Amino acid sequence: MFPTQDEISAWLPDLLGGLSISLQVTAFSLLIGIPLGLLLALGVLARSRWLQVISLFLVEIGRGAPALVLLQFIYFGLPTTGLTLGSFSAAIIALAWNTGAYTSEIIRASLQSVAHGQREAAEALGLNRFDELRYVLLPQGLRVALPALLGFSILIFQGTSLCFTIALPELVSRAYEIGSTTFRYFPALLAAGVLYAAISIPAALLVSHVEKRAGLYAQR
Amino acid sequence: MDGAILCLPDDDWQRGGVQPAMMPASTDALIRLKTLSKHYGSHTVLDGIDLDVRSGEVLAIIGPSGSGKSTLLRCINYLEPPDGGTITIGSMTIDAARPVARAELSGLRRRVGMVFQSFNLFPHMSVLRNVSLAQERVLGRGRAEAEERSMQLLKRVGLADKATQFPVRCSGGQQQRIAIARSLALDPEIMLFDEPTSALDPELGLEVLAVMRELAETGMTMIVVTHEMGFAENVSDTVMIMADGHIVEKGPSKEIMRNPQQERTKRFLRAVHDR
Image (cartoon, rainbow over all chains, first blue to last red; front, side, top):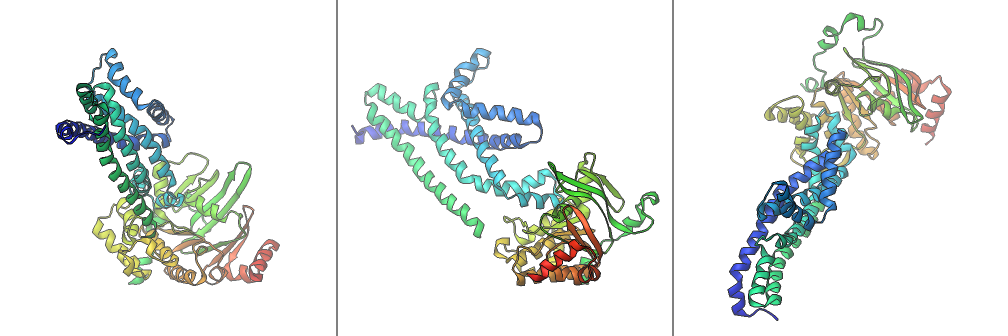
């Protein structure tokens, strides 16, 4: 039931290669998705009706559609419109969209949690809206958002396993491949699970550490 | 030298910049409100307020809660946009009945500083940065110049040693003095104070009142919404009583505080003294 020592050493290079791809997809999805989330949050909060509608549309699809559906749609659906993407790009686009949609709500709520008096003080000092956002609202709002954003990042890392369905050679695909050639599915998937945990658990500990520090800020 | 820091910037804009036709003949009002009104739904908060404040005048606004004092103050710098009437500051007139351009709004806010009941310092910035940020972003001062000016002002309010600290490490009274320095750093012509000592215990309130008194002595034009009757009587030149969105009575501070004419004023002052 458990992988043997020999199996582990035979599979490890392959599994680590898969893990590396999972981490790359996670990194790119977050690097694109979180700034997108910020833009969408600002769009939803914008005064312009027009910007609001577009942002809400993107957010609601990104949140409403399961990540698996987005992946399938972009990888298998878009080629029918003539746009063909590799599985790596398709994975990043789908997960970045998903990240953007979810984090926009986290960021929006955090921005709105900044005390009303902060905005008034910025206005009374004559700061324009951009400076108000840059110097007053974002630094305070993002601090509130940080633990939730990190928590979401762990979910996205785990969500990269869905890319198995679009033939991306990430961690689960590699484990599945090993299983299909050796018929040792359970040990192979177990090994993959351990690798996921090896990243997720320390990351979760980091999140709770950051959470505590963010709380301390109020009493600094 | 201290006076030079706090004193008004050159006031030639008031004289040179104003077209004679717009200049009221009888007064040298720096702020003139005409039939200023504000409603929340069907509730009238300000009911056609007419008010002149001279350059260098210190006006205390007192009155019961819900009388519209704070709303009036917040309408003057458009934190609450009024629904009707006009606000004239020096040569600049804003008509509340039409939409206000952003440039007008920033022009207004450059001239008018505001101090809040709850200080509203930026908690994620050092005290020094609190005072220098808007100088850099609004007035376009360089960082060195802004910080030098900030240090002068912090020294002025007795808090130069707090410059590198964060606001949360300062007492309420210190925070309010920093907030005053932050406002003064933009060289406003008028300072609005919205119950600046109401969130402070009496002793901490005193240190803030001392700074305000000094500011008044340098000739700053000030409008102060307050429950501090001592300040109203002794520091301000003029006292105005508001109730239900109206001005009940307005006049020289000693006269109003000692010998009010209106029954509503007498009732309010009696309630204050009986506490």
